[in-house]
Length: 406
Image (cartoon, rainbow, N blue to C red):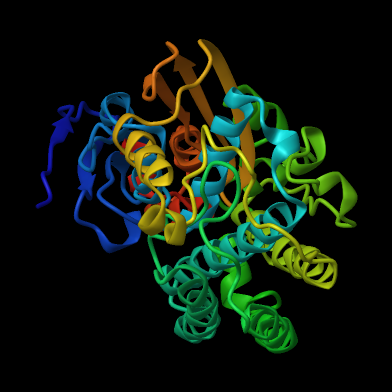
């Protein structure tokens, strides 16, 4: 419901009467991309002040993970940025592997497969980000093109792990099962078909007069403000700052892939759209390199203290059955200490901070979610702008409230 609050100053002879209106946008508003509440103080249709209220989707994920084993934490990471679950999964797994100091033990096949899946996750997230932002502003056709290709990515994920949205796929040490036989053909088929759809979205939006009018010069944030607020991802690169974790602090061998960091300089909603569009082309480039160099060999590390034994041995050998039971029930032991690792998620830098007390459960887990950090730029983007621009601003930040609230 909307709540209206009017502050009135009695008019004095020679002076006009002024009014401001307080408007609740959300938390059940279709264009807030989740249960986000924005309280707007309006002077006519101009936003004087904007205050965001979050927490409607809070589930206490970080605290829950302190009472379960590391592997049991994995499905909770799905429920943060659920539009790129596989990216959250891989980021968490890499952090635990760093804590265990087993990064060099991970087979190359697993690393390359994770790069492919990570970039597919980036594509599916950007497709939703661009498609829903366009839908918010009235461009229905682009939304349909984007979601058509998103379904193709979900088909590949379903082939790999049996799930489409919440994948829970990788494991500490590599992959739980080898990639299916049709995986390479499915990815190559996607690489062949996707550029056509991407070009169609480009033609529908990039030079569309209405789209340009609704996004060009709208939701501006300078590079200095973006850095000061800690923005990352397209929200930062759209303001001219070429920061990408894959280049700054490479993981999974990203330093061996040939790709560029798309940067735009205007700092507006249109610039952030252009960054996401070009990032999808760069992701295709990375996937093509990875699938062409996908090695044969083991898909998970030979680490009996960490990795579950093969299922056929669990059924046939008592030692394997006992080891399976201990790892599942108690979790694998990690060395005492603390670790932080971040990855370049579609929405920005996703970081996991883990404190270990030497047990099979995290003593402390904290998540640096890009949606949470990027959202704080919203008031800076919309104050002094029109009410209609708030819709464009939220869509251009591309938040997911599951990651904001956690």
